[in-house]
Length: 280
Length: 92
Image (cartoon, rainbow over all chains, first blue to last red; front, top):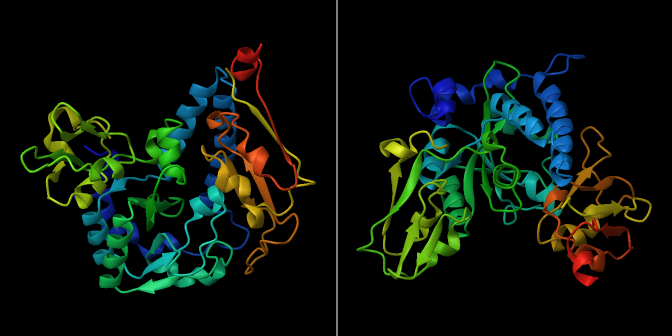
């Protein structure tokens, strides 16, 4: 079972549990009180600077730092890959929905997204009504969207090859994470993907509840899916003249499925496949 | 081999968010830029000297390809490889 569903799901997928979008999770802090979410970030930032340097210098303490950091992230910042279909289910549940600038691309590539045409990140929930308090975070403002507009927005980003994942803020207030958005990421400009793929911080980006499966009778070997996989799980297999997916590497983001012009790729439930049940 | 060392001369690199050449050139995405001047209810000016800081965050990913050094308009970057391996050994 997905460990985040076990802790926060209460019988459903954790990111579809309405309680995780709750207003009470977004209370304003009392004066003079350092919210756990801020204390968490300070601790996390200090730890990951140490860890990244330890990896660069190949120090023996790197593994211990990795375990400590991964545990901290697991408790405070659970993130998970979701396919397009689950983005739709999330915006049906949480309002308002806004398009906004991506903090990862801002920090990693100095991208200054300032208009709806440039925005690549999605904010969810009541917190977005207070965006004006943090003009530096929301450079250029935010763009409010209706549910159909939001679905179109995700579809467009999906076409451009962006992988979606659940974005969460600190769990300091009510002992559970506050789901605040849906990222539309690509490697290497995304914190979560880099931390999982380059630094083995697995809990910063869990694999999705799905895996992609190819129907070899429908596949004609056009190779579009292979261009869309961000995780190196999908390649063209010369001997078959078809695409092939390594299911252990597949993160279940569904980009290959939405890109396939012949409908040859389906998303199967991860937990319906015995050897993948515990691969997250 | 330990990753290359990357030195940033912050007296020369003063407006990295506005310049952003190294950030966008690096094939490995090694750098970060953060606003170090945070004023409540105000956007940080991209062109104000010292308001943003360039950081080396993912140094383990650096290949010492030196493209950031080549592209820096103020010569603020220095990349040094560890001579226990890599290109220094091959040259000798």
